[in-house]
Structure formats: structure tokens, C-alpha cells
Amino acid sequence: MDSKQNQDGYIVEFVSVGNAMKVTAIDPKTMREVSMVGNPKLTRKHLAKKAVEKLRYVLEKEKNS
Image (cartoon, rainbow, N blue to C red; front, side, top):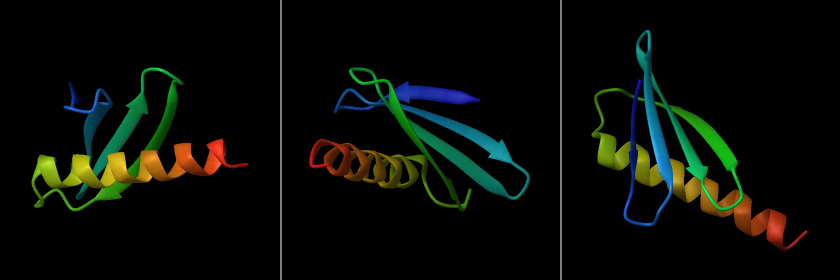
């Protein structure tokens, strides 16, 4: 498992699972997290970007509910 904090302050974790890469993005303010599974041949930067996009979508949806 590998984790890092991106420039937006979100925590992103990477876990290799067989032929896939599980990516989890966490908002440290709300402790909300989302996960996705991606192709491990893609760059971690690309996978992190997609996970953060999903997290922002979920946060916005919850905010507007």
C-alpha cells in the first residue's frame, strides 16, 4: 500500500490487487472516502486525478442533498 497527499489536500492511497489497482481518495476535513479500481498500467497521477474527481462529485452531491 502506498499513500500520498495531493496538492488539493486529499489523501490518496494505492493498493495493487491482482491485475488491478485500487485507488482510495479521502477528504481529511469530512473523512469521506471513495474508492475505484483502475488499470495499473496507467500512471498514479492519472489514477489519483480520477479518484479525486469522484470524491469531489460525491462531496458536491452530498452537499446539495
